[in-house]
Length: 342
Image 1: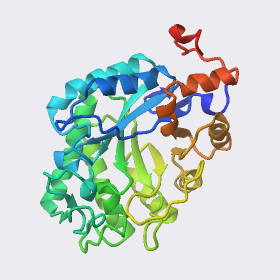
Image 2: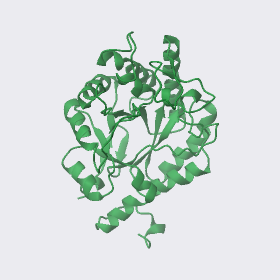
Image 3: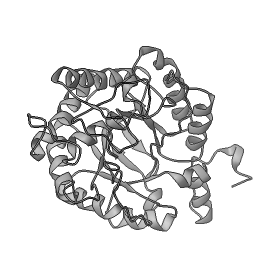
Image 4: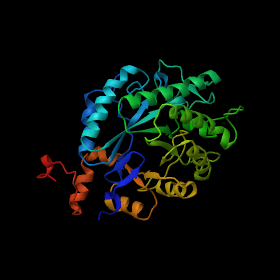
């Protein structure tokens, strides 16, 4: 019987072959039109062949003004569907589930031609433009943009969606008291700061099937006094899980530019464990996880249900296959073409 990261796991429509998920990482390899290109096919399909159970595409912008940069993938127009569909089909062909992270950069948009928006007119840093405080009309527009992004993701054949509510981008900005100084129903209390996220989820659920998994990524702490901690984030998760979120991907930071983060292997796992316990919801954890031993400790001690890997998969697309071989774990998804090399 397989143990640790090599154990299977089921969530809604997902029957994952192991506990390793490729984290969403911005590649900044698209052109200004946000279209999928050859780089994305090579990049993502290699990791699917390499044995991960699921791949979450990089933050994909639901609005042109919601891009982090002008090299981001987009899902703000129907013209993006065909390229994303081909990419999702390729990922699934090689045994991994295809997920996509829907995001909006908010005040962290660096596209000079775009007028940027945020919950409050506070720039991320002195190097960023000052955003426009969102009107109720703009709030409605962004909610619809997320819904339309989810519709396009469904048409493109993705197995699951992850909503990007972390790292100081738009949804994260609404959640954090450091970026959200609104005095209306979208600011102030934890419940009010979570309101926009709740409404985005409700819009997405209008088009996203109930039997397909819906994930949410959050930053469990802001690392600055007066910001969110794991306690506030657990409150937020308990609010949004009632809306049909199936799993929380727990990350940290990104809301303010002067935060000091003490990063070490597994540094985000304790907060994931806390949210799993306090919210009774499956979680995904990570943060400089590079060994089977690290991942197995997390899974076997029930600290998280899945582990996400990022940089280690950039170094070795076949990390799962190599780790299994080194530990004499037999996998039925080792590609026959690679047997002599792994």
